Image (cartoon, rainbow, N blue to C red; front, top):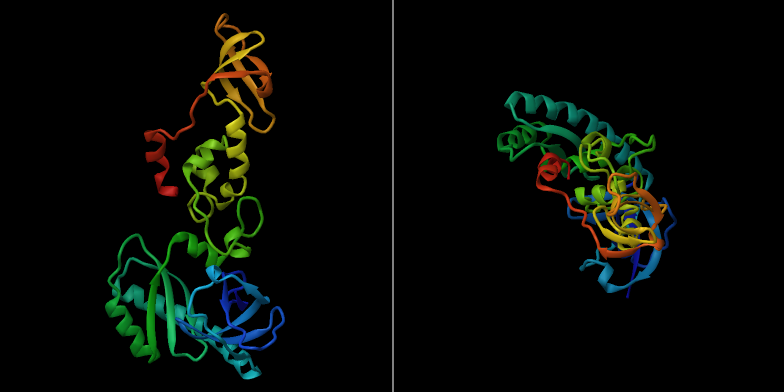
Amino acid sequence: MAKVVGVRFKDFGKVYYFDPAGMNFEIDERVIVETSRGVECGEIALEPKEVSDSEIVRPLKKIVRKATEADIKKLEENLKKEAEALVICEQKIAKHGLDMKLVDVDYTLDGSKILFYFTADGRVDFRELVKDLASVFHTRIELRQIGVRDEAKMLGGLGMCGRPFCCSSYMADFQPVSIKMAKEQGLSLNPVKISGTCGRLMCCLKYEQESYEHLLRVTPKIGAIVSTKDGKGVVSDTNLLTGMLKVTLDHNPNAAPISVHRRDVNVIKDGRIKVDKAEFEALKGIE
């Protein structure tokens, strides 16, 4: 076990563990820490607590000190510099004719490094751009390529539900989401309806997946052969949430399907839910 404190560097970013070094902290209190990126100012997101060794990454770095008024002032100055650096970098990108989109800029607290985050469809040779930027800012320059999900997390916005993006409001890490989840949840495999603003599958598909997996285990799938009190038939439609099935009876296939609850049928041979090759090819770009 180790005593840690949680520090966050963005409003709703990931929480990182640090050694409190014997100091006491309150939520939202500013602290100075040293990270792989350099000296940074973060906010206390979790008060000191004990966690198992499996939850931390060794070596656990210590919090340097509590932030002073001078640190806060420096942080505010850096925010202004970041806005200026964003404009300058965009001009340099255009000058070099690079196929990349600048997303965000981060100054380390001591100004020893500037990080430029960008998106691009493939690899970008930005060596000359780095030299150009270094000659302007006279400090270490790092360009970091990120994905479109990370871009949405950084910039924020509103989803189709009308609420702020989950990734930029409270999610610490992205969870894997697949087309199969949308298929299992009975959603229309229309990219417009199952994609977020980032153009990838909506993160919220993950939230109810465990419930749907349970319901799929206890509910006959479309194409399943079942026996009912009216005879044997094939399941033509299902409602996972209500448990109601529509079954086309073998002895009267031209009649309208009967409605029956899943608990009132016996499964002879279950069906399968799978994404066929054509569906996958049409949607693989949004996973």
